[in-house]
Length: 298
Image (cartoon, rainbow, N blue to C red; front, side, top):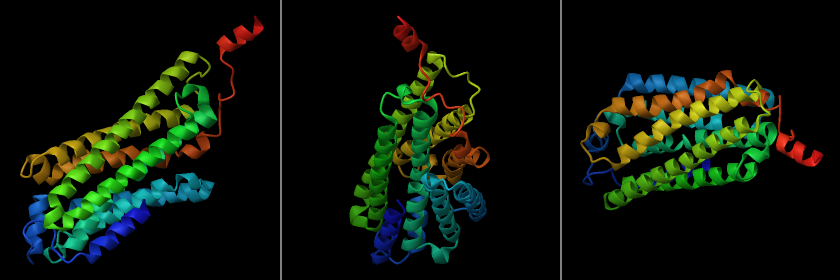
């Protein structure tokens, strides 16, 4: 994913036209016209501090426990922080140019895909190591890889759409491509959320888990995280489908309340409840359901 971001940033730097609108040298008016406002510097600074702080904490957990499988979370949080650093720059008319704008859009719109990927991996590990594969309608390994692949694909689609924003001739196409990427990514996560609930129902119905196992904290945290990610996806769909000039597109407060804040709430819990230690305790993966015990005894 970072390779995709880097490629798109490199592609952006090769373009010789201004961002959006009529091709002209007044980049300041173009950027503000597209956003519908001048980005707030204080709000962006807060977001930078929040996401980079999260990134430091996640990197600490990863290196402390050697949980290399979880690297996508701190990397994504770092990329998100870098995106808001560029947003701070966009508050200055001197920096309201093609490169910083498109780079900021790619980083802040596409980096959250790594948060989704982290949840997919955590869910797969919960099923395989703690709950048992019997509680998944799809083999846990396939669940993780299927949704991660879907995440990468929709990430590329969104990044490609954003890259098209740099030319007036491809602007409308870019918007459509980006919208398709957002909708597909959201639909993929909704499918994952459904599987999450089905696994929870299956585990509770079986009766082996007491509800006090250590890994339940992570399973519940995963549900909370997924709820806030769902809030964000609904906002992104509504935003991408709305017409220019509508409140959701011209008032920056909506971006922070329904996008930046929910994403922060979706990951901050992992600072205090890092999944690693909980995935090694109180496993019922090898437990035998009572139905099978009765059948074998007969």
